[in-house]
Image (cartoon, rainbow, N blue to C red):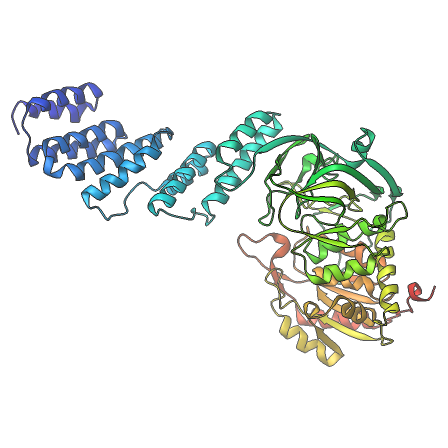
Length: 598
């Protein structure tokens, strides 16, 4: 290396300034090269990179390639990698996609098989942990490009796909913008990334209830049952009543109504219905909206993306919708879940059976529901309506009939707020019970057998597992209990089984819903974990609508990271179980069902 270059190189290393680098570049244009000088320049680049001066480092690597042409591919690769790193660290993302193409060319020229390129996923994760959401999104977008074009990483550090991560981060941004009524900004933000996760364009809709829409002249509305006050749930625990942390549900329940909307658009597997610039969603229009999380557009089985503020929602504009001339809404979020089907959907049939609902309009259901749901629907339907199974695509209705959930039932409360424990109206579920039992009897599906003792198995499920179920079953069999597996039975077989029971023991889950069909006075022991925010009032008010009486026996939770407190697995002390069964067996007084003989 010529002596004249040595002080200039040392000055560039010591000062780390653009001026020193420019002086070095000017001298090198006239100077010779060589491997030793190239190594010094590469060392300078490495030092500058360590100091965070990535642009100067890239220039140093470029100069190294200039003075040692036979090693230029290797130094060019270092220069491109360093430029990408610097741009991303400064959140200057726009030039990076072009540089990724240069990076692949440089790697090919250098015959470099190494995978030491910048990890956009690690970069995005760092931004995410620091709360820099937009920078995280831009980094994950680059990770998508790297994956698709060059075989980069496919999953984030918390095991989401890149598409799901981008979608979820965007939702955080939408929530903030919605609260500030900055709808246009949110729509523009969505437009930048919606194609990555396959979403349609957004539009903003004012949230309204069916009743308010009717008052605005855009729907019809008829009350089937008026708003009324119901009785509180009478909770019973085997041991002393614990200090529950949930919020008791409101005893003033809303009216049960029938509403028709013309030219509405809807999304199966969702509760979202839009009419012009309005979104019809009673839950989202409820006075408690600020306290609840609306899950539509969040769950994995949703066919659209949505974000909800206190007054407006952003929802995908339906593209290529299916056309249905007229239908009654029996589709919606969580419709395939047995418990949600009973609590949120079946009460609507009381409205659709009402004389004010015209004959011939089909019942519209989600096509991914189990056959038992349709079996129940056929029992409740008094009008012989056809059924349309809606695929997972938007629907445009010429006329859509709607009916409500019979109580305020938020899917989830916002973090930091207690669980809202809905109290269900006994008149609604008593009517559903009556209709189903009458149909079962008319079809010869109810036996005359009584006195059965049932233990409901939970083996087929992976959430809220009763860990020592097999041990408990062995303890109960000598006491006359039979172990049943509801998922293996038709719905009418389950109705007959529970109607014949005097005593039922089972985990608090959807299968326990069938105790609604037990005869008055039947005793039910609901097994559950330690979670004090559990919806004990919901179970009690629903089950006891049929005349059965439920007592809760709490066990020991198996605390599992990342599992919702409602769904943790648990175990039950066998001695406590046997003591509770013995106590409940004493003084049993199960009566004939007046529903069947009135």
